[in-house]
Amino acid sequence: MRIAIDISQAIFGTGVSTYTKSLVQGLLSLDKNNDYLLFGGSLRRYKELQHLAQSFRASNVQSKIFAYPPIFANLVWNKLHTMPIEKLLGSVDVLHTSDWTEPPSRAFKVTTIHDLAPILHPNLFPRDTIRDIVQTHKLRLSWVKKESERIVVPSVATKNDLINLGFTGDIVRVIPEAPANIFKPSTNYEIEKLKKRYKISGKYVLAVGINVRKNTDRIIKAFDLAGAGMDLKLVFVGHSKYSKIEETRNIRVAGHVSFNELPVFYSGAEVLVYPSLYEGYGMPILESFACGTPVVTSDISSMPEVAGGAAVLVDPYDINSIAEGITKALRGPKRLITDGFERVKQFSWEATAKQTLEVYNEGVK
Image (cartoon, rainbow, N blue to C red; front, top):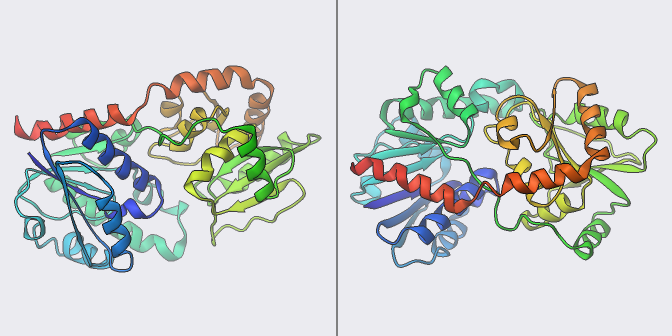
């Protein structure tokens, strides 16, 4: 088979980026029988995307990167839905898309839906961007519903979201994802070096992401309750122009950090507090487990499914529940650490790639 995979989103440093790069690497390590064609488009970051595509080394992989901006791809493929992908790539047997555009094709079409947050919870996004985001996702989903022969999702929760939107469950395949290989316990030296760099003193609770969806305001209020009388800091990783956090003696905002620094932030934390209001998967849960850090997360959406009984579950809309969860995790970390390590062992990119290849093979049966 000749399998085309859209890697356009792989340069943006998001969860979709991690998924795309890890999946491609997993497929190339596993499968020597099929030919892979990595394609994508960017105008401003053309060279970066081209360099990424060329970084995948295997005898059965080629790449075609084009100098077109995302707005052009959205217009041609989502709005007008013209210019079949074969015009750019030639004949392909499988077309795997993910996250942004849905080009027409004669191939067996597979798409990955990571989550449905813009459709189901537009109130969790900034007002000045949500209209365009919702429109793009609705257009793409309409073509997925009409044309995709298989839909890959990371969780049963996301599959159920699709079914509630009118999709047939028969074509949906649940394929869990795994943390990147860099997520593992850091040394004390690495942790202390990072804390010095970001001016973090003493023990800390970690929160990843700063926005309404990540429940930032309730995290702060819950920490004030749970951390009262304790020598403990709350450290936020991430940057957002939409959510302003006032730093205090006990609250530190690290801002944007590199992907390679994330494992050290997890490893140095006493607890990860992740009471998100909606997630298609919730990868930080598994990343934290892999680094040996207990997790407090939501009892809704995909998060209980991902945690698998190894985290403290809380009501994300109840500040007292979040505070009690933090306290519980701080008091009994050993069991949570052990359970977390055991849970994350159940996930690997080798398994994700193998299951994805099985989906591709459904197109030739």
